[in-house]
Image 1 (tube, rainbow, N blue to C red):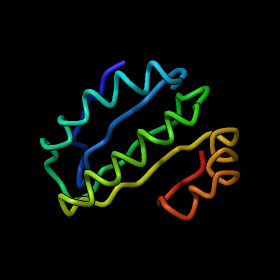
Image 2: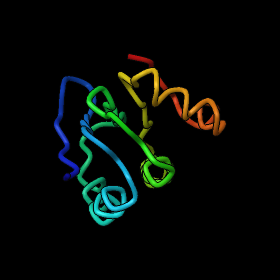
Image 3: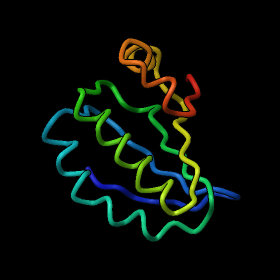
Image 4: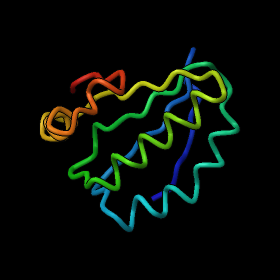
Length: 102
């Protein structure tokens, strides 16, 4: 899994897919420097194709938000599957992110 940034209209988009467990999150954390290449002031992380997210995936998103906010970029989480959204609710992360359900 890789962080691939697409520029769509007024925002940059990263689409994640599959299972985001500990090893996948670790791989993606190593790729966070790619966020320095953002071209807009809005980053959308599309979770539509994510089947599972461990706590390491939540840490990844939190780190992405920290890094983008330092750059003046707003991070939005889009197309969040119901099961993943419940994880955000149970952990209180819904208060930390701008999240849109699928």
